[in-house]
Image 1 (tube, helix red, strand yellow):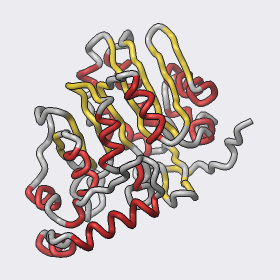
Image 2 (cartoon, rainbow, N blue to C red):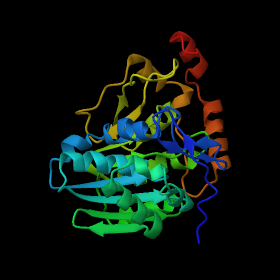
Image 3 (cartoon, helix red, strand yellow):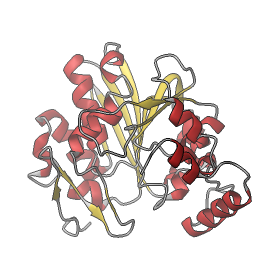
Image 4 (cartoon, helix red, strand yellow):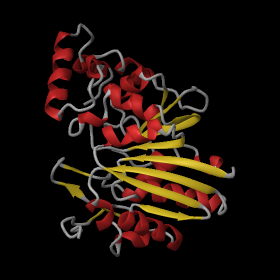
Length: 294
């Protein structure tokens, strides 16, 4: 029996909950609102309301976690078109996380229809009815994504939501983005909360065009973006500001590498640090001073 009691719910500002990972030293969501973050940075950023007007949609949720991104997507899609047929594939390392997230009151922020989906995914790693086929793949996402690549799975929207590059560099590398982008439909969009220059460079290296997710009404003083959206065409992307464009020319923009998709976080960080030390690009501190970023 999977133990779901080891995760202690933490209330966020919008009344939804998150967990804190001792392993990675980070919370799964922003303290400003876990549910709000799922809607703004993922469901809205990938244009799901407009896409839901069609007959079917496919979603890939990289680092499924508590299931909030999938839940927000389903809420948005079915509010627009209750008959839209949705295929969802989630990738998750730790199956105890989604199982803990279906306990009351955490799950009660979602509609009954979506609650049922989250329960089935957490308990059985699968759910299917006339309007949904959902599958949760447990394991290292660097390996589980290969199954989808072999199946030529194509997602209209990809939610890219690992822990931060500092804590979890192995899921932000050029090589992993290459695998993930193979699962992105030609007209699809990939959204992530990260505004890191290294992440954006990795996305560009895979052939994606990138845009920024503009700031919402609530943000910290030092923030300039809510994240990044990638697609194979620049159409419909919010362009980077001059400041963000210049960020891509600094040492901070040197991407993480994992040639075999099996290196440890320590090895990936060491390789990244060495590349930065050998680079003649502008320092990130110089860029920060020029743009008065503290």
